[in-house]
Length: 298
Image 1 (tube, one colour):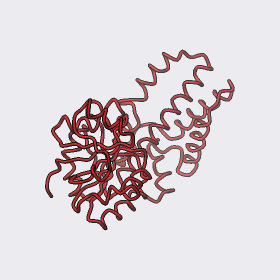
Image 2 (image 1 turned 180 degrees about the vertical axis):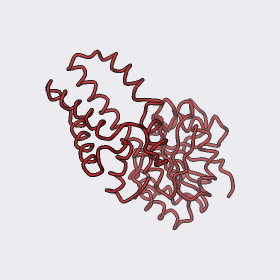
Image 3 (image 1 turned 90 degrees about the vertical axis):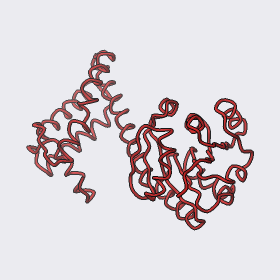
Image 4 (image 1 turned 30 degrees about the vertical axis):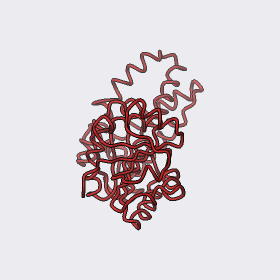
């Protein structure tokens, strides 16, 4: 496949602006399009490149098209309802770097393939701050040759590329990582509000949580990678003792009338796993509870 040089970038809002700006900075021929013409013009004034007045102009001659828009519905609308796909030559590669639904991504990919156009899903993680310094994490799904063709683009805007598998798998990993982050956010806030109601200082709690729950203490580093994925299950802490501590947290919340819906559900799950598997097993063997329910093995 020929290398990519001429890029059409659709959507230069908060995320798309610094991402497309990095491509200009790294020497790519970038044409931007945004539903707000003034936004595209502001991009050119700040970063360089060109602004297209129409989608037909934007797509003509492009080696690749990158989307950074709200979701797959906008991607489909721009491609097929507003006619961008009609302006793309066979052999063009379209890359959706938005957060889109994987099943919709597969359908879009099939529709583009019928036109001889490739499709890759490559959502990013890191937000505006990391987009500005080109250290985004990128999760790519699709044909291996297409992903390889796009690597120079990814290297221009990110620090690490995860090749996830078939089309749609990048979007699956993106939504799962956001699910983990979303859960961790409210889990932390719930714990801190319980602590605050008990009388703990917020600053002390934040400092302790940062030390005890992140980095080497984070479950992915301390338990999942070394014990679950290796099937060693040897942390030295039995499931029943984790279940006990979670129940103490719930009982404490109840005693001071603090809201603890996540803690309550967590206690329920640990208790159910102990009952099903046996509470004397290593804490990391709780993975079997999910593996059994889902019919897969990590």
